[in-house]
Length: 260
Image (cartoon, rainbow, N blue to C red; front, side, top):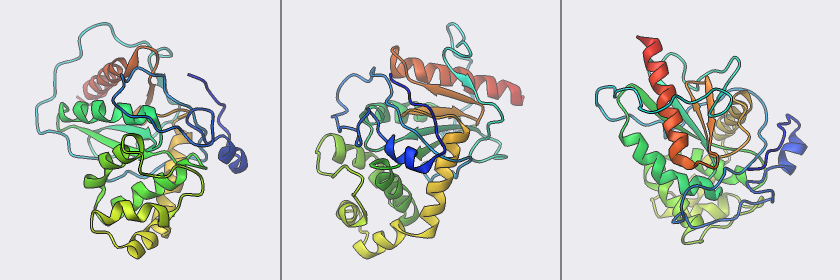
């Protein structure tokens, strides 16, 4: 996995907005094994808003602590100095995934993440945060928040990954806008003008800015990345998504124990 240094300069942010070192992440069918290293990207500014993909976990009792060796700080995860969760004071353990629709690694990871979510107890909240790293990332981050505001996110979220990486029916590039994305959301009953108005709204602008701020505050440099309770950042490595989620499980258990 290659790394790019974080910069708060907007022009540089836009120039470095690439999942795999190019302007646009290359779509790839998520049927392949999800062991690829995470792509890189460069965010900008500090703090973020939860998304409607923050879903209610299954109403099950807290599970036992994970088995096996504990993850190692600085190796399996990074502690975030002065980090903050997206939704402080909820009484739940927040697991925030920073992702991109056009990122092929995020497409590979999505089924595993959703399966993981179904296994969680009611004290865990999964929040998905679309990465607005500039360039080709931003149109789809805006689309995510527009779909959330329009009440069609639950129906469209997985389908968008499929449309980009499997069906390859969606355009990818920095010049994609509401006009190019509206036909996709029309299948969920969203009028093109209503979609465009929401996509370009101040409300979506605010969520995009907060998502950027959260990514920077959390030190996110690649997608997918997971931030546990605002305190710990976990990224995928050569051991794959299974190891990543195992580390998350350990950190969730640690946070649960600390609350008791």
